[in-house]
Length: 137
Image (cartoon, rainbow, N blue to C red; front, side):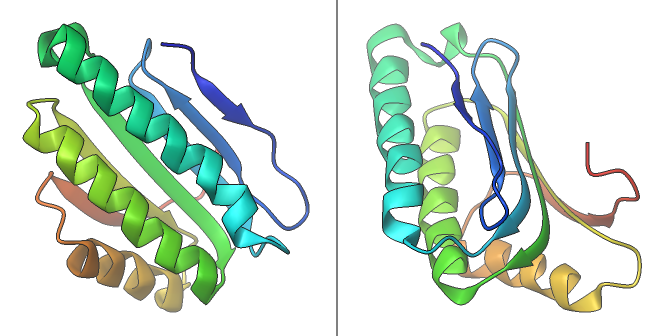
């Protein structure tokens, strides 16, 4: 399956979902004018990815390292992150190893708390961690 690549803009994050490498990243600011039109292609890609796993088996998929690093995320985007995490939980339940890393800038306790809340609210059971990161790349 082809990777999904969405370039960052001033109000939306860079998104890379690359099943060949196993690296899934969302990095930047997330307050797009139309959050639905921005995140729906991501959810559609994940739905297709799940179909590929069902068709080919979880052994055909590399372990996923899913890294998120937001400088800012609005409440509408946060709701989409919960849905996205629920998709990741379904992929995890299909037998694909997943590690979730929520990064935040040093001293940004609000973003640290947001990451922990997201993991809790989404119900994801994959191994996950919230940790400081000085380098967003």
